[in-house]
Image 1 (cartoon, one colour):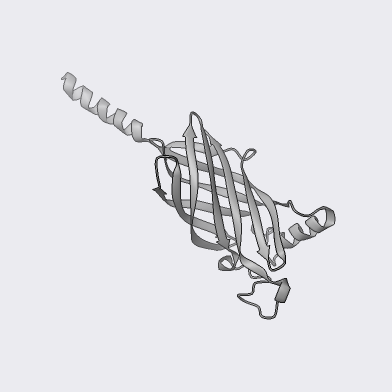
Image 2: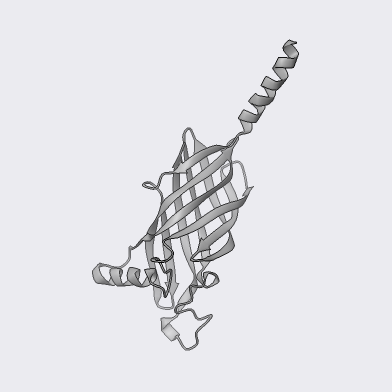
Length: 193
């Protein structure tokens, strides 16, 4: 009789041992740093996260998602009115249409561990405006106590998300006004249980 009671208890314990732990993204401590490139140079800035979560199972990243607050976009390489004009333009319909699309979203669909040091290849769906595309990037995510630290860099082709302003892929004769299609987004996430 004791064996019969012990087996279901053992099964419950085994399931609990592999249940994923969810860490909520600390939006005050997390940031995305963007870099956009043009023929004559580049611009940099930051965005905040609206919400997000990362899942770990037995110390291994297994999933997650995060929402980017596009209204929080800032510029860090210009000052005063020049920075305001740039951000105003990036938030306009020419680029990200932030009034209509205040949030962008990334959802992990597959995680491929690269080693035992928290390095992963991440595959997921990125939604900007109304367009969703699969993106892949390398990241590091480590679990320590009640906290997760994660970082990675996405290179995003804005033209795939219907952000075409100043793109040499769609417009001829732009010369030194050309803005390159690809921009980088460096993620630094802190998440807690």
